[in-house]
Length: 568
Image (cartoon, rainbow, N blue to C red; front, side, top):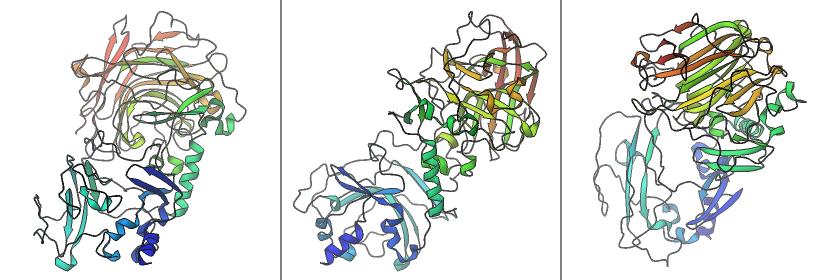
């Protein structure tokens, strides 16, 4: 009777159960998990993420890429956590129900207790966490009473007041499905396996039940019903009915009819070949079904990384126009003129960042209007771990109609940009990237105003990706008054990230970041080279610079080099 009561206490009601070859997994409401049976946690509010990470993690890749870990098919439903179901045979193997799942140790601290043997490295110091990368093995055991492990310990206190936090991998008979099952030389390794472990102490903002509910509602708004879903190594892609994509949540686009292609292109495009031939872009096997568009599925962790839900997917800028705002630094060329579009070819790099809150980009800007009513259309590539959770270059677009205050966002993270391509994923990884003194990987962007509809089209290589409807804008509904081409970085720390290749522009071709064939669309819908009177801007020349490469004609045309190492 006592065993059954203990079993009921351990196995919480499941929202969903998943069968695996190593036991059943119950998806339990996160507020009903065993932790909340602890008397000190009765009124605890779950902290959904760390408020920050230790510095110095930006250049590390603590992935478990070669391991089969985690549940398949997206795991447990939102708001639940996976817990392995305990069997009565496992309880019966314990010395007593109260000792179930506990180590058989007395006052373990550095010295070996009876039957326990250690081989460890240690550090005596005041510390606030540790990280370790370890290889994983399947050590052979001789009987069911043994275990073998590799782990880290964080310890404080003495003897009967010892505090300890531990994590690692182990082989232990507690996970056997029944007492009669013989243990083999390939005893399985538990789900505790981790290749990179980070434990951090500190004060952090908690997430209430109400905030968690709000997150789930916002996630439902962003992730539209999928006609088909495609799994990739960098996240799931949902093929969404093009008339149900996020753009149609915008009040100005409720009755909008999708323009499937531009009515015309700027003249002189016929002699150019703006392809992205060396890039692995677009979905394979024809992309999404006809009538749908590919949209990366937003995860709840991405929402939680935002300053607030209303700021999700938005730049942290105030009235940005030529002037550097706190933490933002620029190196670009600009042209003041009445323009109706621009085209640029740029090489792609993977600049090194110092932490998760930094970004580095290369892009074009089409701007119009006063500072507090600034209209902007932007496109290019960026490395932005705070938005994607990785440090690889990605295709992005951006827009705002009020100086980055309340309107606009990256990609399709809010209503606005209308996608028509069914194989190019906005926000997708651009690979490979350029190598120093090696192959240069280029990509071409064309943004122009459709002379008939007034919509601003994005052409990526030779692909019509989509457009920003004219109705989103005020001053850009007519034309742009300023065009910019170049790089931008953002940091909150004292150490600046790399821009472009991470080298100054005077190192030149194959070593520095460049933009070539810089062109603008005039009022006759003609692409023209930018004139020699364009301006250069660099707000932190000891870190980032831009130089004019002149007009070389042919494949290069008018060009610039820009970038820098940061670290200043």
